[in-house]
Length: 126
Image (cartoon, rainbow, N blue to C red; front, side, top):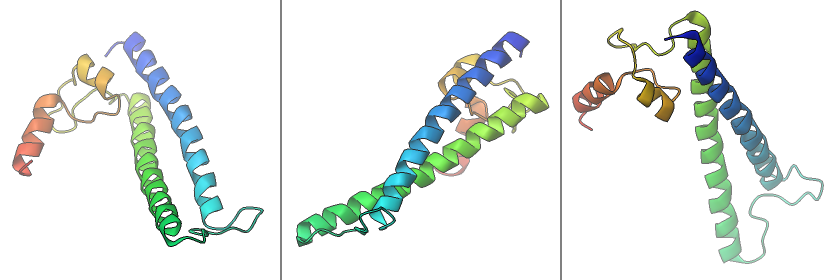
């Protein structure tokens, strides 16, 4: 991959990383608040009505799941940035062949070519 494309993908990944970090921080703040770490001392599912408590609990669990998913994606971005530094970005980890630019544009953290991904998924029974 040429230097110009690498620079573009690095910029895309860095921008996505910055956006994601803001989202993670916002979610973590909401989770801390729901856990009762806010100034008001109101804890998770602090509503007086049972239905509201259930809604509060469901929202809390959704935020926890979202936070975990965001952290995983952040790890994938960091690994992609490291591959750029290592000179292995855009190379399929399964075949050693280049990953198509269209795939990288759609999924900048891609580790596998479309063909390798399809082969992996078919072997796992997807």
